[in-house]
Image 1: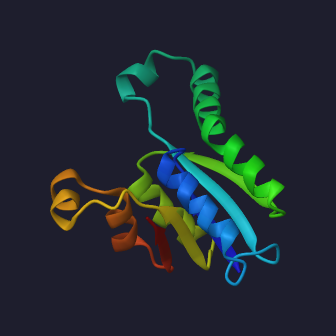
Image 2: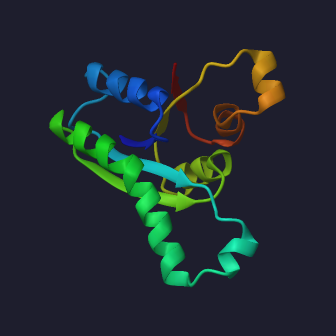
Length: 140
């Protein structure tokens, strides 16, 4: 099974990663894992003032801050992972990546806002659930 693990480096990511490694009945070394983080885009006016290589390096550095500890932890647990990043809005990028990559499942942490909180604040998890064409496992 191809599993996309969406991470943002928060405490909710850590909890979700712990869940993944603790449940061998669903997750284990036989699965194919891709860890994805989405880096918010630099505003267009600022991006226009920065050379392309500097901007590319910035995105890569920001992504690596999130991906390195997750990749290290999962590999210590015996899971082989591919790590990648995309630039944009997580609520849009995660479902598109899941579909384009033909993943069987998306796993991500959730802040666990109430229904009213999600309505008022917006939520990446709600947007992913609404737009994703593959099953999504939210870990609170």
